[in-house]
Image (cartoon, rainbow, N blue to C red; front, side, top):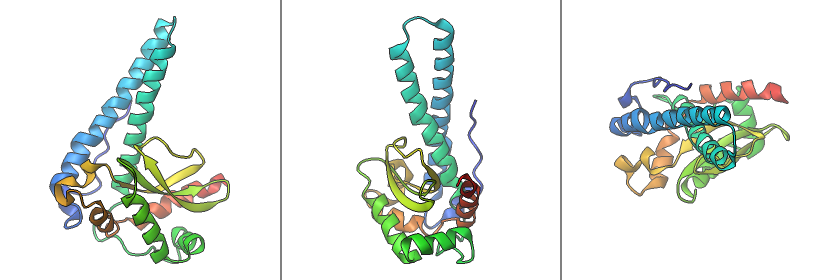
Length: 202
């Protein structure tokens, strides 16, 4: 069973970029909802297996619920770790993530422009993801509609949540302002650690 991880900082630590009220609501209510939804879907799938019989529709519904809620839980867990107080700016050029950002995007500024545009232009709700693509062994920026439609070949490293619950209390409909603010709290140490963990898969 899954559990809600504690925040790695206080609710107000990401001010003035992310306000304490939003962080508290986002973590304690929205993220918890995905945890509970994933656990409920797992329990339902276990019940279906034990019951047997004609279960095609039941399995599909419970699997859809698991995919949506578990993806939400895992992406949010990464999201919280991806941020820190006094973060942001370009990654250290001597780190693995710093080297690949330079190699695959040409510069931090080029990456940041593409990432922010991708996040701002997600249709409806979803995420912008910086990921490590394990076949070509390169960084890519993807849009994840809702939160479960992503490539299985890409390891997420950095995620910007652009569901309205992530920013609406402070930024209302100004998603682009929120995305720019997010770039000021990126925890590149966490992103680098995720990349270094993914690279042995090559």
